[in-house]
Length: 279
Image 1: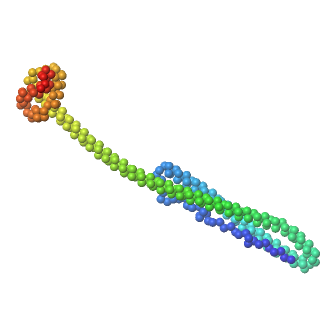
Image 2: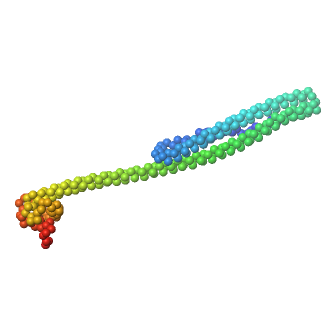
Image 3: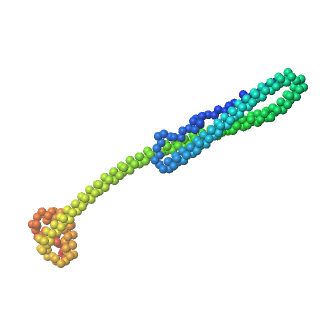
């Protein structure tokens, strides 16, 4: 009587995927962060990706270790079964040759009882291997879900990079408009300064001409006026205002020559003489 060995082909060795394929690269070449908020958000995403990468690597390492342990245990069980079967066959052959059937049956029964404990251990080991297989499948599903999260993070980072590029282009356009406006403002300021200088120069020329005319009238011809009073400040003020309002031809003649008739001077002083009735 022979005992058939247990089948070990039902337990398939666990082959885990490479960790280089499970965890994608975290580096994004050609990325440039200039906005502070975008840089902080990108750093947060990178830290989250690194933590997920470390967790995935730790899970893969544990699963690989468990798979190796299960493989070694399976090989050990197979070798023990082979040894037990071989020893049992040898003993059964010897007992068949030396003893009668009853003694052989009693020996077989005792050996069966002795093999019950190893068989129970083998069954428990198979159940444990099955549980480990389920746990491996669950960890693989978790890694797949984490890979989906990593892909979503990469998509978010790509969207943020596109938004940063759009903002950069917008800022460049605003900068160009601002530079153009600054150039226009500078041109306007230069034009205003030039006009102000011309106005100042014209005002100085006008004041100088008015002073020359006033001096000519007061020094040369003012004594011809019947209402001349050198102590009357109001009269001097009125005379200056009258000269400012005088005809341009008269002012030109006063500026070109001191030879002006008394009648013209009297006509001018009539304007400022409070005692002379108006026309």
